[in-house]
Length: 280
Ligand code: AMP
Image (cartoon, rainbow, N blue to C red; front, side):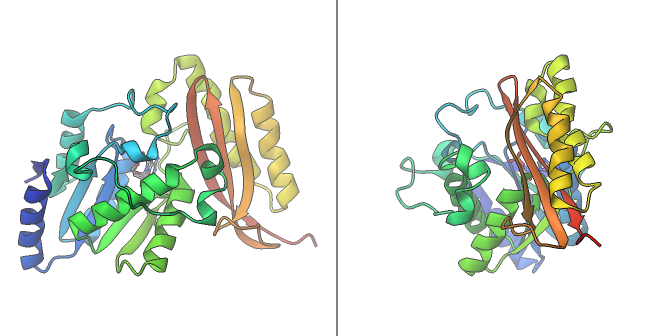
């Protein structure tokens, strides 16, 4: 049975009951418009935890003034159905006032240096807003374990860092990116794309896939860059090769290739793992 609740009082009551069961509580935080990527997070949570909470909240704090907060898709009825199908125990879909009683918080998270690069450079304040709501939702749900997608790789890295640096006592689990059959990373924002834009958007995952075939950093970047440059419908914001901690790439070993681009007015991100080797 999946319960749908909207207030923090209902959430407190439900989690008190779950704690009485001594079950592990898992949370999957989302902004709704749920797709198979979100559902994979739910499945992993369900396989592991006795009590699974999905939160659905479009967090105004993490949207810039010219971003898509107002037009972000809101599909609660279908989202609840998806949660039911995945055997989620509780859906917490609060209003803005429920999460931020009294208005925008005056004390917020500081994402540090890792929050200034890549997405942070293009979206000032985004990660501070994201970490603030993640921290609040961790406190409100009392979760022992929280699931996040590698699709938002920098977000995942920052949440791990916050849990570590601030001793949050919660386990953070990363889940590999779920893709459409043709490779496009699933995203709630894909629904903004026209059929032509959808075809152009494929260049992102293609570029990453080509890049990841290489074990030399320059060759990986060049291969990915070529595919992006050949697609006029894509305006690249950044293409970056980093270490798995988003620092400088290692001379050899696991690394990450990340891209952000605009297709029409839609901003898309994607990333893949790759392994670097020293030239023989
Ligand atoms: P969002 O609703 O976009 O804020 O995403 C909620 C959670 O789902 C985040 O942890 C995302 O990283 C994760 N997520 C979104 N898309 C995917 C995907 N294609 N594969 C895996 N996880 C995803």
